[in-house]
Image (cartoon, rainbow, N blue to C red; front, side, top):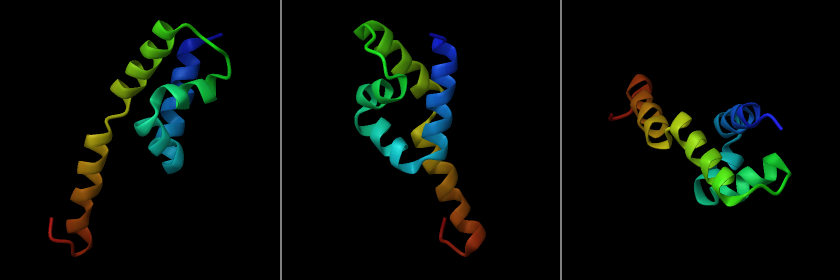
Amino acid sequence: MDIKAKIDEIVNKVKSDPNFADKFKNEPIKAVEDVIGVDLPDDVINNVVETVKSKVNFDGIADKLGGLGGLFGGNN
């Protein structure tokens, strides 16, 4: 199994699927296991979760989206 490819797949899914992003944010291990589809050792799963988190900054995304409000007449 190409773990790097799976990490990229998960990152892309988090970025493109709001429902999966919520699932990953609330239950990252379960979300990763669902995508990978194979039972991996906990240390591998935890490593994948941390790598995905480092590539997807949820707070940064929220800040960027919130900043767009000013473009459309928001009070940001």
